[in-house]
Image (cartoon, rainbow, N blue to C red; front, side, top):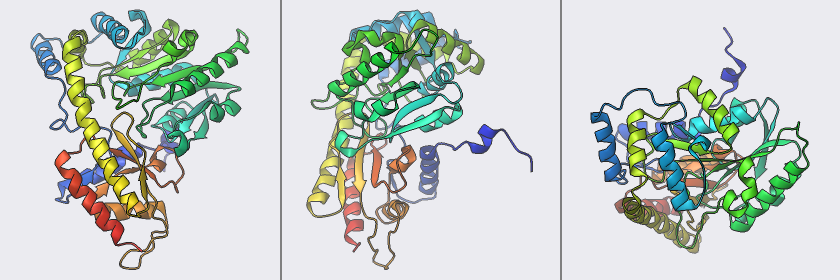
Length: 419
């Protein structure tokens, strides 16, 4: 039997996509399942902005279907520059902006630009896909376990012992999978740590960079505020690369327009890599987004409605889980802060089903909740946490409001059958 490359033989596919596909197959076969696994949107519940949709249609009618520039068309990069200035107060020139077909190719290109074989990459767990990107680039995994008392976000105390010799720190806030955010003080302390470490490195040594994934930055709720490294400490600009785009801010996961912001020399090398991969955002969509981003009033109106719909789902399910906890069931949740995710705990290991079966592992618990309550959620083990973690990601992007009461009733019924 022939061997493929070492990468191919050791690569693990997306656990979340695999789980979501399996659930969708069961749904297609007629089973009723509340599928809260995929970080995507049901367009019937969360359509893209009407203005953006019309602009995409018009761009195709205008035959905008040729290859785009490798770095993204200039009109779009100018529009992104204006958008982030208006909404975040960040200043980036078009030469410091790289466009691609969503965040994934940008993250991959950034890893390839910065990470050599054996370079240490620091990231918290749980977190989305950092473990896979480190594997893809032959980096050295430096996983930092994050705790519920810190909202599953890394702290400077978590990172500091590993900082020497590190090449890249990966932060995501608001975070996938937790729906939580880095506080102002926590982010400021991490920035200071990076700057202090870089000050110790000689000119011939590689600097320590920060990948700052803020794909969900507009989706904050209540008193939650999104902070970014450059606003807190402008000295971070030479070392920070933002990952951003329209996928989550405009419920446009399938439109595939993302961008990176960073030092011009890093962005130029990312462009070179992406020019070989051809991972460009489609020409028509680039033109449409370029024309949509300056529409401040339309964007404001869209976000007001969009965010209220997401927040309603998050808070209603959170309140339902909290009510079950008050009744004595072994469940818990972290209050919604941001993104489209709710972090919940289902701590049932050791329980017995009505048939006398013991839920010996967390995998048994996951299977029981799916089979008995018809609820599909993603265990934190799929995001790098240990197999015994009792915490889960619940995504509301495909959640129908009318389904929530029945879903919670079925969860309570499933819990009540355990002893």
